[in-house]
Length: 255
Image 1 (cartoon, rainbow, N blue to C red):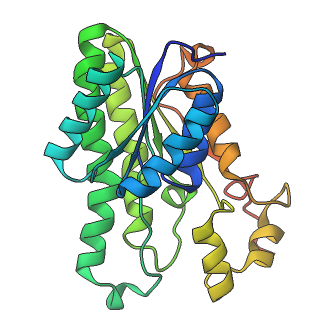
Image 2 (tube, rainbow, N blue to C red):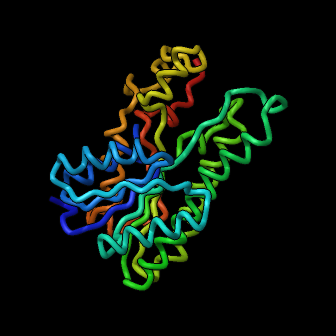
């Protein structure tokens, strides 16, 4: 078990990618702190982690609220004695509408959760990691942060900024033996994407036609990449961004 004796905090882990990441760490022997915006979903993941034999706690917190974030990190350290790995997964999408129809409130909400939340959680966890001379931070961004998807004028910039924030933190925290890296998923078979497909907002056939490997990724694919960055195998990798999209972003062919 690669993470036996380690404590992991995963934000936005009540379902989808976050839940897959939390359970992957649980299978590898870690103690897992599960954050979500609602206690019901956080506890669901924590229960599944306990069923795998892991120690797990559920924490309801809004990652955009600094006081709640600081209290969350304090609780993790108080109950488990450490915070060895932070996975900033909490994030939201936006209504897919043209720029001129987009609500500024939607912009603010997306930036608050996706970027401010990553900043606040990293800041809180880094304090403990710096004092103990080690740590791993893995930020979940998106291939959207590397491209120009139309009608994603809040979501895509929030993910581009997350990729850059990871690089800034990697340089600043490197002297404290803290690695900071990013995983950028492409189209992932989550409930959100399935809903977009059903609504006709994502054309599955077009996505697969552009994708060299001919398939969408799964939450477990993202979990595997996250575990790699958190492991000793990646001890000399920091400031990197790993795109997990079956080749979608790399494909520049226009047909």
